Length: 57
Image 1 (cartoon, rainbow, N blue to C red):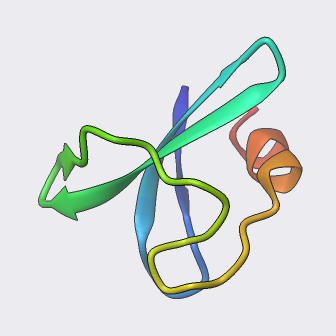
Image 2 (cartoon, rainbow, N blue to C red):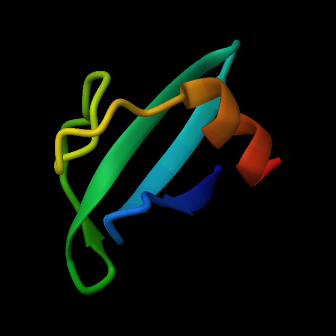
């Protein structure tokens, strides 16, 4: 588990389990949404989940 920040500045909590990357966007100071995102950042940019997983390990 770790945190990752999109180029737009949106921060995510990231969990990698069995090769699957799940990401929850920060919604307030030190609080994250309950539901993970799909394939895009909240800004609309596509997220390379392999790169995110590599960045937090």
